[in-house]
Amino acid sequence: MHEAADPLVRVVGLTMAFGDEVVQRDLAFDIRRGEVLAIVGASGCGKSTLLRHLIGLQTPAAGQVLYGDQDLHQAEDETLAVLRRRFGVMFQAGALWSSMTVGENVMLPLRLFTDTPADERERLARWKLALVGLDDAFELEPAELSGGMRKRAAIARALALDPELLYLDEPSSGLDPFSAARLDGLILNLRRHLGTTVVMVSHSIDSVFAVADRLLYLDHVEKTMTALDAPRLLAESGPDRVRAFLQRRGRP
Image 1 (cartoon, rainbow, N blue to C red):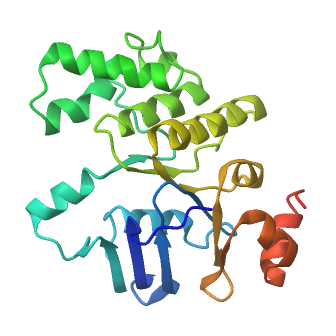
Image 2: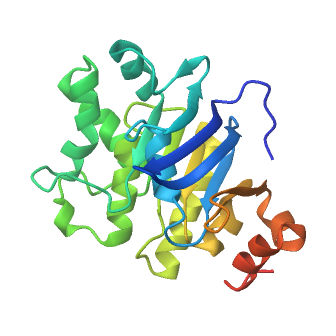
């Protein structure tokens, strides 16, 4: 587990709602530098909704998402643009542009947000693709990639601006066990070799146990977080509903 006096992100009193319907209330946790934090819970509990709040795509009903002293949802446009460059996002389906090659997809953030020359953009994109094991995919179309390759290409694009924090929405969704295990290994390598902090929404308990330092459990009945700790500690001695959730998915 990775302790830090200055966490990358602090979530304070966060309530998420759609109109009058509360999804989760009173969420309070830190995202620590260098950790892999998994967000889990039953289907429909608000995992992906929380991710959208963390990256600024949805506005809280109450509370704050703080990057340092800056509230993501109260920042001026210029400050918000700087904050968003601190993190990369891989959406659940990859969200690669089908009209672009894989290489063009990875180069897109560099083209939009930097003055990097074209030849340097290509060099950096090829390096990021090699980092995720897609050395030969630069000229391919997204439709030519397997599901696991699309996920890795989306991670390469999310890493284009060298973010310190990476958000992954269901990275193992739809993958066979071999591809899922390979993606788990990639997540660990990013943390180990680049120092990347990773927050992942996941329904795959196998992946959570393989890569996560801490597990945040969103309770769909209480509509709040009821556990935050190392996955194995929660499986052994966490709240009853958390232990049942982990154990019925075949882990100790």
